[in-house]
Image 1 (cartoon, rainbow, N blue to C red):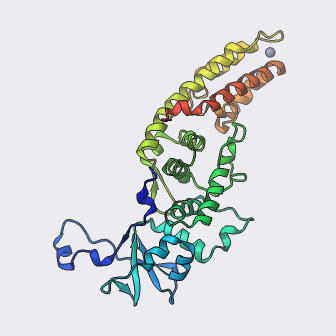
Image 2 (cartoon, rainbow, N blue to C red; image 1 turned 90 degrees about the horizontal axis):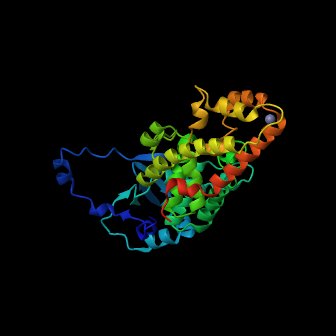
Image 3 (tube, protein in one colour; image 1 turned 90 degrees about the vertical axis):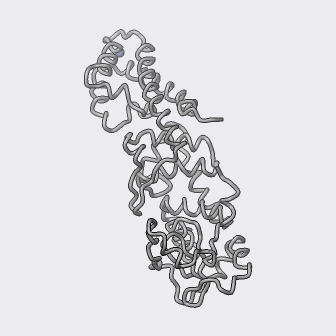
Length: 335
Ligand SMILES: [Zn+2]
């Protein structure tokens, strides 16, 4: 999916736009909104105006050329004499998200906050730097972003909680960003294991969130790509079955207890009416750890003898490790 086209920035010389009279004749397509100046990235002495979507940035060509060979090539091409200008400086339209271009320019012109080791970057900034750093070949920023993306690797089942824990996650993120993470990894072919980890995280979203997306605080709705949605729907169903199978296997694997009827207690507590969510949920790796089931687990633990409790924990841990190692099969990802 990482096509060559993405590496070739799509500039749209304003001279190629349609004549105004023809534009006005199109009554069925409303005029795009008047572009607005970015409140921070508009320098009065800037010598180029970049526009992405409805946002314009007045910045410095020299700094762009210094950071990016793509911008250097773009600006080295002779500008058409009749090209559009804004306040006398060239106006270049780019086919990028205004949010992402703002993030890239912000780091280029005021990058100190990104490189500070003491502060975690926001996921949105990491994503912007990776996507546009790749497109415009700002390789140091792309690689810095990749460093953070790889640190999101969920690693072993024991470490996978990192992503959900704001104190240990390497980036600051909000729920909608989980979808963006799942979308970015296959777009750039960053790694299958990482992709599967984010698909698993997406499977913990509600079906409504999977289908309709999640509103982002930046004002857009983050939605899964059609491929990711298909993998998640497939994976969610398979993970629910895997949860039930894991519980069944662990119940069957319990030894006879000399102290109490621990095996029967385990079976009864998990399978009794009203507890079916324990059996049928898409988070088998989180069994014993899912906060909303904690009371039920604690109740269950209080009925069993310590030896059986230790045995059942080992059975679940072994099964979880096995599930984790074969996780890609649950999503039926093409190899
Ligand atoms: Zn026992």
